[in-house]
View 1 (spheres, rainbow, N blue to C red):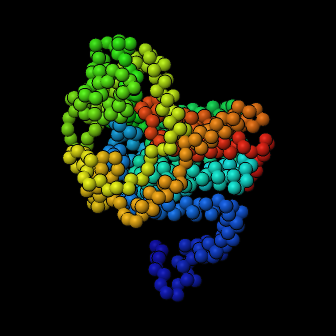
View 2: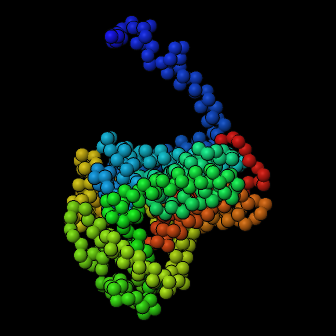
View 3: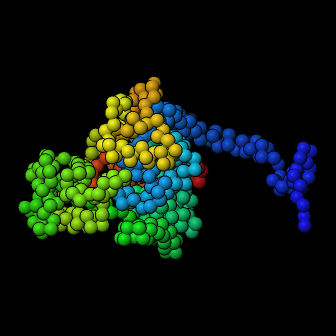
Amino acid sequence: MTTVREAGPGAEGTGAGRAATSPGAPPVWRRWRAAWPWLAGLIRRHWIFASALGAAVLPRAVAMIGFQPAMLFRLDTYDYLWGAVHVSPNVVNPSGYSLFLWLLRPFHSIVGVVALQHLLGLGIATMVYALVRRYGLPDWGATLAAAPVLFDPAQILAEQFVMADLLAMALMAGAFAVLLLRRPPSMWQAVTAGLMTGVSVTCRPTTLPLVLLIPLFLLLRRIGWRKAGAALLAGVIPVAGYLGWFAAVHGSANLTNSNGMFLWSRTMSFANCAVIRPPASLQALCPDAQPGRLAQPDPSRRLPPKWYLWNHRTWQWRHEHPGLVPDTAAFTQANNARALHFAITAIAAQPFGYIGVVAKESAEPFVFTNDLRFPTVQPRSSGLSRANRRYAVAAIKAYTGDDQGVAGDLGYKYGTRLESPYVFLMNSYQHIVFLPGPVFALIMLTGLAGIILACRRTAVAMLLWASAVILMVLPIAEHEYTYRYVLPAVPLACIAAALALRKPGQETAQT
């Protein structure tokens, strides 16, 4: 038997003292010291972007200090926190983000979650810069392309949310970076990109078309059917695994029990049951069958779709069973199927009405400045019902061990503790620095021009621009417009526009 002795003082020269490093290896501090010239050289070569990246840390630090412990969004945040403790597929939103929170649960820190998300946001900007530099633009142009991700207060707010949007955005941007940074992409790049896209679907289902778009891109670029097939398989595996998990728990192979419900709420913007003529079993889903202000015969006077979805006096809530977890009772398999049946019937009967409302709302981010802003006033009382507030506090306590000091600040829209003077600094910042709607429209048009003009057309630009359009339009087609759904499209649109502005044939291996 061999006896291992503890290394005490003066044991540096013994085998125990050398166990942590291989023979002849320099100490860790020397390796860091040796890496510094490389890092300093990298910063010197990309000093414009490095300066912008450093500056972008400041508003994020202000957001973290001024809005504590994070921005808690309606009930979605509490669903994600609850799902991270009581791991089960949620019936309203996919639980991929809850699994991410579950991985971070040992730290019991919501502040730690948003700190990591801010790092992911800076990582997304870095990927935008690297991709644009890879395809030949100068450092100042690539930095400009990354500027909306670096400095837009709506982007910083999304990072401060305990919500799935930022994680899905990071996975999607990472997939494109892995796929496109090296040409032609290798097998591992194709597989990794497909896998990241598939995982993003379990956070935000609107990325599902990208699982098919990436293999299609590989086929059109003649990269090879093996790599295209591998990317498709890698993307399908996480989605199929989640479908199996959901089916095992809830009895139906689906990502949620809410897709039909959301689409039904979308049809409330235009549906006319005198035209649709639904069967008797669906009459209760007509707009004029809903209570109060929701029963408007004139589509131009109807409330937004969310009011139909979450009003507890509408048809789907009439047989709800109260419990600790609210706002889930309506999302049953039967209700979802019934709502989907009505929605498909309504769209088939009034296709131009459907196209009209989707087109109208899809134009909003190009005309109006976004409405996603940091709050400046603390709510005097909770805007949540007693049951919802009890659930919100229970979710926060289950994840962190206490209520994080925000039990009295759980407003209807946001729940957070506001700290002066940082709140006022952020308010001033978001009134000065933002991405105007017309500027975003110009970015999208520039990318489109790069696709139309044969001398500037590239498959990469087509992939990114088409992905940006899908990410913007799909949530509107499924439910309604909110700028939060536009944010993931911004970095893709910026890259596509940058590629349209480069000189034909210009490309570099420098990143």
